[in-house]
Length: 295
Image (cartoon, rainbow, N blue to C red; front, side, top):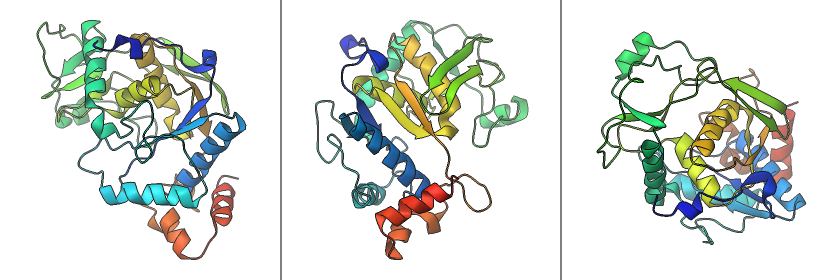
């Protein structure tokens, strides 16, 4: 890689300074679940006298919108959350918008390719729908059936576009970590999740790769996010390991659910921070409402 130093550092428990992050995606308005998770992240950074970073995760060019970037910055400030580094403030690890960090993701893709961790997948959606097993969790990806797994690593590939690139998981290995809120967690590669996409055929780096690269290069020591991403953490630990990086620490928050027990999502417009602000609620009342939906 061009900048190998940026990947070889001690992240997580051995770091001397706490660095947390907020990582919203500008694909809709932030909701009650975001409010609670981001408030917890800000509080943990404050309690550790650490640094809080805001990262704009605008990877998806089809869904990300500039107006949602402005809305999320405004709504987070309204909640009383402050950050020291971000797309609006700059900082030592800029840029802080993922759409501007493509070169870093390409460096990681080349490293994974060179070391045999990834392979090209030409399966269509129709192939996967027919052959893949059902996902174990809501919104989780199906376990890949392995149709392209045996492909030999291509010797001459200059760019990832045109096919999906999948990470080859060590089948049967238990990937464990001690979550700072939910305790010990363990997922079995090949059973709980399969070979997963790290670069899409439309030439967009996937979430799993991008957040690992960004968390490493921005020296994040603790990731605070929702419990729906526990399985993603297992996947990301594998990427950290393949890149030669010690994974960060994790704190997964309990999920905020609506009155029907469904996980809060951006489609719940009535529960967006923006709509609740318009009804006259204070930041304290919004956070209280979010907590009530967890208990």
